[in-house]
Image 1 (cartoon, helix red, strand yellow):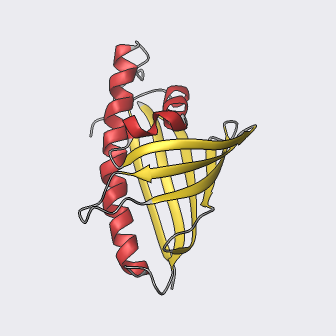
Image 2: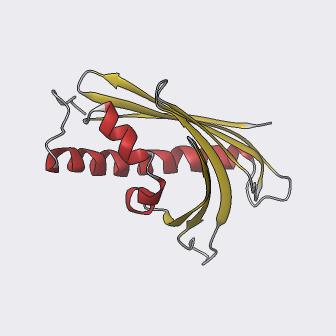
Amino acid sequence: MTGHTDNQIVISAPVDLTWELTNDLERWPHLFSEYASVEVLERDGDRVTFRLTMHPDEKGKIWSWVSEREADKESLTVEARRVETGPFEHMSIRWEYEEVPGGTSMRWIQDFAMKPTAPVDDAGMTEHINRNSRIQMELIRDKVEQHAKETGRAAPAAMPR
């Protein structure tokens, strides 16, 4: 069995601003509540290899791993994968952005499989990622929208929630 998640949110901000803020890796500890730090290990054009470190979990464990992502602004997509897989057999992530009435649709698609020794199985991780993605996307939406207002770059017409 493998895990698959697909989560989406509309952000009331222009696609260029949403892209700029959400793809600025050094900003991630301020956008996401779960990340304590990001260390960029290598940049090669639009490809970045980086280490993410999370805040301690409820048991005090600090999770950290290396990922690689490649952003394609022309197609408004990002392809990423874990290089240090940790409890995952594999983890691939795709971010898609689309200009929609009132702002930007941001979509995260994740495909993965857990190792047999992982503390959770594919179904459990799917549930966790779906729950956490909604939380993180709402935080990011609020922060991007606030930044858009503060800088006068809000979307032309806000979408009702």
